[in-house]
Amino acid sequence: MKYIRVFCGKWELRTSHFCSIIDIFKSEGDLFMGNITSLQAAKKWNISKRQVNLLCAKGLIPGAKMENSRWMIPDDFVYHPRKQNQNMGYPNRISGKYINIGNEGFASIRNSEYVDKSKLISFVNACLNTPQKLICVSRPRRFGKSFATKMLCAYYSRSCDSLELFEDLAIAKDISFRNHLNRYDVLYLDITLFLSTMQQNQQLVDRMEAAIIEDLAESYPVASGQHNLIDALRRINEFTENKMILIIDEWDALFRECKGQDALLDRYIMLLRSLFKSSLTDRLFAGVYMTGILPIKKYGHESAVSDFYEYSMVEPRPLQTYIGFTEEEVCTLCKKYHMDFQAMKKWYDGYCVGDVHIYNPKSVMESILRNKYSNYWTKTETYEALRDYIDMNFDGLKDTIINMLGENTCKVDTGSFQNDMTSMKSRDDVLTLLIHLGYLAYDEKNQTVCIPNTEIKEEFIRAIRNGNRKELMKAVIRSDALLSATWSADGERAAEIIGDIHNEETAIDFYNNEQALRSVIKTAYLSSIDHYTRMEELPAGKGYADIIFWPRRETNHPPIIVELKWNKTENAALQQMKEKNYPAALSSYKGDILLVGVAYNVKTKKHSCVIEKITK
Image (cartoon, rainbow, N blue to C red):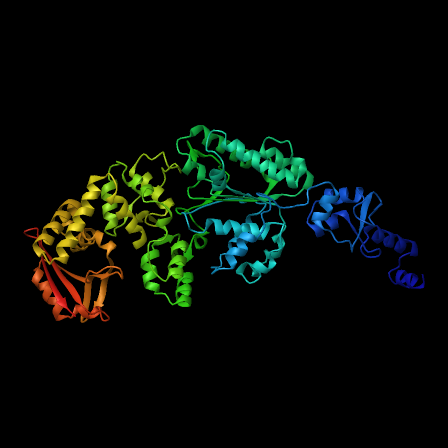
């Protein structure tokens, strides 16, 4: 008491007042008695205060006692979720088939070459518990959607410890990193899994809902007996007093696989609405992350789930760097694995998403694995999918496709697209769908589309060759004939084919234009993609070659050098190639080379062509 009197005298306090202060601290516990309150325990163990009180009431926390109408708990008590749940009569698990699937998926990804996209977590963290918490990200197949969802499951799920998986990634330096790491129940739904394991009939959505509830009930018995998912989640929330993270991968798979089954799709939309347009949404979910290929389905003037913030191939900002591999990332991979960056760029670049050049991750990684540039992405789906869309008989679609095969861009209006695969009413709807499917690249500044790269152009030609559009088939057949004439050095036949294409495919106001001839040549040689890589304005000897077709490894055909002349002769074009030593551009090549001189006379509107084979 001596020291208490000295302490009180210094601040003019009575001893009785100080003792009262001590009593207050004692009731709080942790300073004098080594105890913490149930609220402090809840925060420490990442469970609800209600769960802590239930544990105390059942005598499952040794040393816990009631003081001043609240539980005081020994600070050194070690909480074991599995043990405590079992003692309370709950199953010995906090993970399941859909709830808290853990971090094994992301661990597997980290065991291979991983391009760090973990800063996506920072964006999601910033959206949690805000009006922006409902996130829908749509991108084409094989562009890393499932990689992102597995990463988010590993980061948020409380059923695992993922610190080691993330501590060397960019997100670990983010201020929000530890605030949300492994702190939530995560419900993960892969819609393609339901489609592959359940019969696709009118009861599909009901069976999906029942399976999810059954899995939830094994971890949270309070969900047992519920027939609606929203009610099961509400019961869990009332028990835990915690919000969860919901992740839905391939949300639009039903629309893609069950086209025409309107009753089934309407039931699915109603399920989504019950979750996301409910007064319970804010109470149940700290955040929702959905992925798909298509943006959210529209009904009339209103989206079916209108509260979502959508990030798509048409409206990607600010997530454009997470849609695929950036140019910087691909360049780093090429240096690491000694791959030709320019070849990689020609094969897999072309998507300018927002203001960022994006590469197809699937194709880039497989080309590195196999040490070969080839068509990898489109091999994951048959060409019939593309063929069915370009076979649609909409005005202007045929001309647009032919122009894009000639590496031209075309205007598009993306606003009328209904975000499904059956409601196409115009050329623009088809083109917009092909943007979302990854077959076309969209320039949001100029509102134009183009075929992004060599890989996709191959798929277009394959689809056309096996399609029902006679006009498009004619373009490919004519291009095949031009290649054949070139290989056989038949300049007269080549000039005839080029003239036909110029007359049929070039607008009147563009016809007598030097650039029109270049465009015609690119379109005329569209079949060359099967055998060649095309390069333009390549430094060659003492000048620049207009177009060079460089043979692929698997072809036996010779390189082709094309020189174009406007209001001059084809022989002048041939002479220029020789005088300026254009074949020098092929420095490492030994063998035959085809020199092709093409000329157009404005007055006569005639094309002429001369082809000469030389040996280097």
